[in-house]
Length: 262
Image (cartoon, rainbow, N blue to C red; front, top):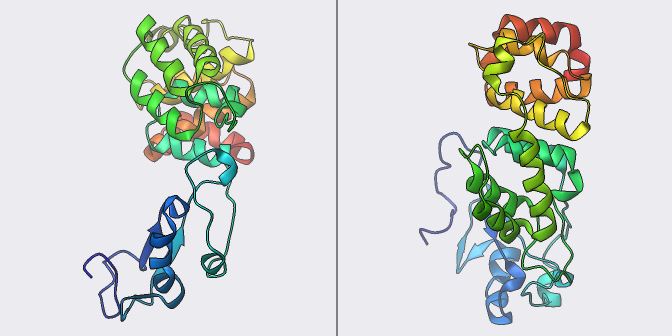
């Protein structure tokens, strides 16, 4: 009974209640599903009621996903409200910035939004690109300035051959960009890219490396980019460190561009 939030339990400080998530619900066999009937419908564990501030949710794959699923019994179907969820790129990008996902992954998804979730249940590749596997990619490349042959093979084994190849090529573009130190020293003279893929990479780099100590000079370079890429870079900076809003260079830009930014 210690597993479940029961009637009479104290809601933990700072929370409104509990979420009881029955994950991979349709991956369970029929007997296990049947054991959940009372919990889901009557909100009881045995003869003990769940806490009134406990919300129950279940999650699982579609049978068309070629995942291991069992059809839900009609008795269980009628005890639930059914919703199908989908990927939202903007929400994922917001999350990824706060979660510390490598800037090369984030700027690549801005450049190739269809590759955030590139799933075909009948695919012939060993894997595919999805939010989970992009997080794997971020962990694989974090802290590596250049990707080795082995790294590129790992990319193909993480997000699939095609997407892994295009992402590796994108990282090679980033390798050829001026360094942050070079831009900081000469923000008014370092060339500004005109190719969209390079502009996304540049904006992503600005967002990842702008700090209080270099913001004044980097902002001189950022404002030379097209407005769309300025917004992308500044949003990343602010999501990563809200205190940067107080920096004079950013505050001035926000004053001039508040409508576009927010």
